Image (cartoon, rainbow, N blue to C red):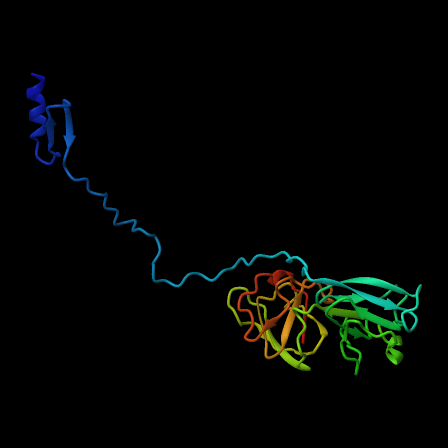
Length: 252
């Protein structure tokens, strides 16, 4: 009786037609399975040809300092006399103030362990001493009239030493949603620290110099250079990944 009921059910129109497997005593469904039609919910839920949205969340947090480092040998008396000299550490492209040291306005001798250094007449590395070329190893034991002017120094390793182009301009933009918008084009002088204007401080999303190469810093006085961002050159960076950490730049 049960067998007759089973075959009656199998004969109902619209149902999948199974077949009987005499060996396993099982019903095997041979009807093809159709995927459900969901016309009201197409997949994928976006257009594959549409322009993707512009990023609105660019990562912040300052990157680490450069790995290239060195020392500078400074003396408060000419010709490297014992007892008047000291080795001071430096990080690639960083501004090093001499305020509060015996060499503030009295650097008679100066010599870097590697690379070359620019000397400044202010603590913030905005005023390279006029007529003074970069000092390279082994340095000079007698800076003469320059000695009384030195207030800070900035050194660069052999990897980032660049022949200066004297001056130029740099395009700075503060719009995080659209590259190269809300911009200004300030001028710069080689090896002179440029503190970012309020519009761009911690909001530097696009930048590019017309010439030369520029280092980017996470502070306002070029003391904390961003590793991997020491030689930004033309045409520049369309989407700067550390936009919310930028505080100053120095171009050469």
